Image (cartoon, rainbow, N blue to C red; front, top):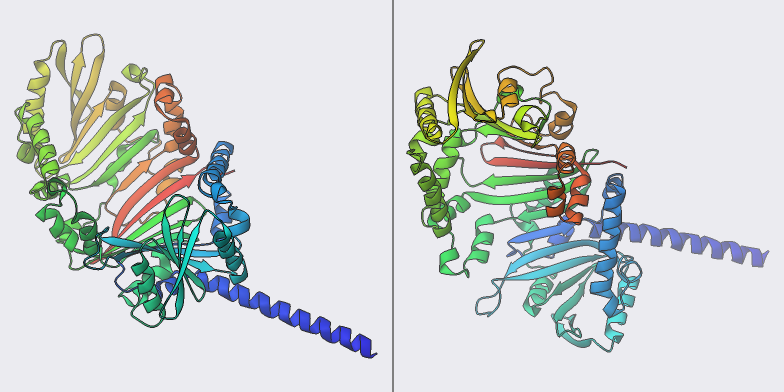
Length: 540
């Protein structure tokens, strides 16, 4: 009886310890997987932090996507990473690192004044899920004869300075459930000070909400937080050569941005990136107006790529302002102006000045007429409040076209729409334009598309399965869409051997795993801009 009591008691103790250990490790794993907890150790002076989430649910969801070729490419890349970065150090990722690795935070911390180094120090904080495993890993590094390890104390914490066989030095310190790593010792020392009570990144305005919500994406893979955007840009541009410095106009634009948070996650459609930008003060109302998107109704379902939005005139004016003081942008501006001057056009007044309404530009698949050889043509719709100015530009372009050998103009009436076509001997109509209504100008490249753009399509882009799959989950109150039907584009590209020769195999494999890409931007309030990018992926 006594023996059985002893066995029962022993089993009970073992079970209790096992449960307690499991609960403790699960609690630690949850803690080191939380970006806000990591931010509590990052010095308050950090100007940027990115967190890699150890999110198994996201990784499992990501495995639902991809083609066999993509999975093979990822496997090869992983094997090459292991061979090139870890094999020489006798380190196995799955055995030596993965068992203890939690979330990883990279932070950019400004260098102390007087340091003759980069303007920022890069600090890496690695969450430790299992201290026994990380202790084994540290001993393995320490025991490697190729590595030199120097230990010293700072504020009672041991800092290990490890120099590998290539002469690269890292400073490491274990702070509770985190491993701090930096090439510069001062960055680790500042982190120790923060760990022991000094102000942290987590105390900055909007830090808690930004890091916890990861810009609102599901199943987050990574979060990037920039608490002071202008300070970040200044830190990375101050040491640039004078001819590469940001212009005064560009700096003024940057100073309008307060903070930025980006989140990358996985949902049922694929990969999604959301960026939330906070401004210091509201922009003029005309810069935050939404677009109705009605101009896209004229485009057929065969549209492989489209860009829509509003007020090209305003965007051009902003570009001109930003070019002041920037030599590169000024050169580009002058090149554009010179190009239109050769056509006897003032680019500011006669070209972009009247484009103050909504617009849409599309690349449309077609195998008819002169598009048989290319398989694709283009079209655009431009809305304006100044039809007189638009017609002035068109008249000048017509005169330029007529001066080319073999080119003639043809006017025709299709219903209520007057169409002007540019024709070339032996080819026929290769470009046409006309007014769909009082303020909507269409331009089409390729005779088949001239006919397409004059009528509402039976199968339009809006409402088509492909378009809705890509943009259907994006915000509907926005400033326009970028839409790319990658599946259709790859079918088109595979028709032409020269495209396959120009496109690297790995790039083709990656692109073939994407069904489509959608991008849009919107304003949730007068100080908050949200941009969203969705990569719709092929499913297994």
